[in-house]
Amino acid sequence: MTTGTAPARDTRRRTRLVGLTVTIVGLVILAVAAAVALSWRGDLPDPVATHWGAQGSPDGFMSLGAFLWAGFGLGALLVLGFGAVTTLWGQSAVSRRIGAATTIWVALFLALVQLGALHAQLGLADARGAGDIGGAITLATVGSLLPAVLVGLLLPGDPPQPAAAPVSPEASRVPLAASERAVWIGHTGAGPGIVLGAVAIIFLVTLAVIIGVWGLLIVAALLAGVFVGMFAFTVRVDETGLLVRSSAGWPRTRVPLDEVLRASVVQVHPLREFGGWGWRVGRGGRVGIVLRAGEGLLVERTGGRSIVVTVADAGTAAALLNTLADRHRHAR
Image (cartoon, rainbow, N blue to C red):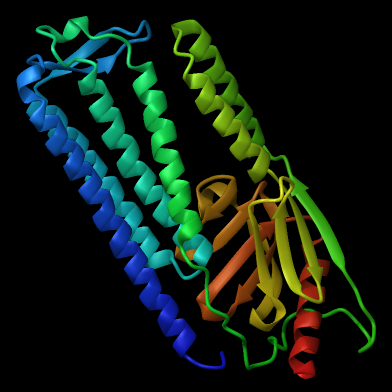
């Protein structure tokens, strides 16, 4: 129970607006890319190259119309899917930011890849003469990632939604005197996700060397940066609430004490519940910082939001958070 329904209504309204907006923007990006490609029709071969082999030479072809319909159809399905997830599961600002950024990234990446492939064929009579498009793919990766990250960063956070009711009486507690202070700090890292990330980075570097597309090294460097920030976290429970912070300093998230409804221990299955490892959004919009399977800290908060962190000794963290949240309620 919260102090009022206005913040919750505002959050639902904001979620629907963000989901609808990024869906429309994504579809517009795809449509503009298709229109630009059609304006090149007179300067493109027929059929156009649509796939390149390991040696950087075209080995797949189709008509321009079929290529554009295939690209727009796939892009539209992905944009509509991610837009719907953003709308349905965007209870928290983190969920909205991830969903919106992913929607924009998908649209921009597919649009830029398609335009890059066609641009390499402008002025050719035969598409088999098209050169390598490794540079275009690199440009599409970087050119889509930066705007998507910017979209996620610029979206507003959640308004304060303090709880009026006490913490659930069934929730675990730790014996703590009124004047006694306590802090719990845990660390979580490694797990299968970091192994998969290392394999992906090695694969990209190897592929760049074999086929000579050096732009893939930029992609590998970006991926390495993502994994540095996403696969080692410090978890802290104190008199300000819950703080989960990457070893790189960002990303981070905080749950204030006045928004804690209940903290408990859950068993986490990363693939089944979150589709993988890292900072994820799972079913129902639950935010997960899941680096391994097993014990995790679940914090249910106001506004229908919740967060899961896989960390050892989650039971102590949950009990202390419940106790501190209770004490904060009584002190108001």
